[in-house]
Length: 155
Image (cartoon, rainbow, N blue to C red; front, side, top):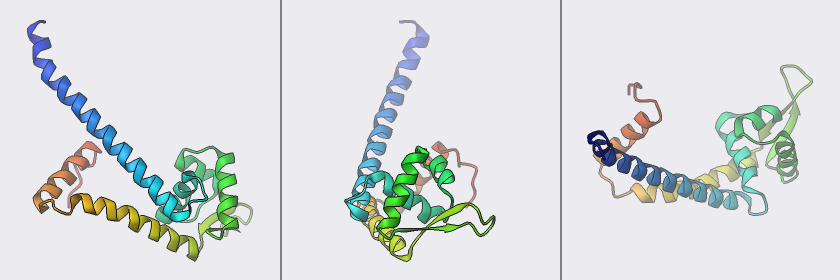
């Protein structure tokens, strides 16, 4: 092992540890999403919750935009929208802007069900950080922001 390889070994170990922690974070987030989806409606696939969660965050849109935004197949999105509509979670209406397209939006019932499911998810999240000092939470937020490429944002 040459001098340069010795200097990079600790860095590579740190990068591997970071990868492991990110993998654990993503796995935990996925598990929380599956739990929230089951809380929303256990009879539906978690992908349906992904759609209603998107509508909750970003508002009404068409099926093509939903498919693109959620990285889902258009036919799957259409099928899930039909299921969600039949259960009263979403409405499909003619687009007010062009009169031809169809816009999908949450119903009041769907909106409340999403809030209930997210409260469950939030409870687990907030429980994990409940004993952190404010400074630890600020450091964590700052590091995640920097990692996500938002470090230039001013508060």
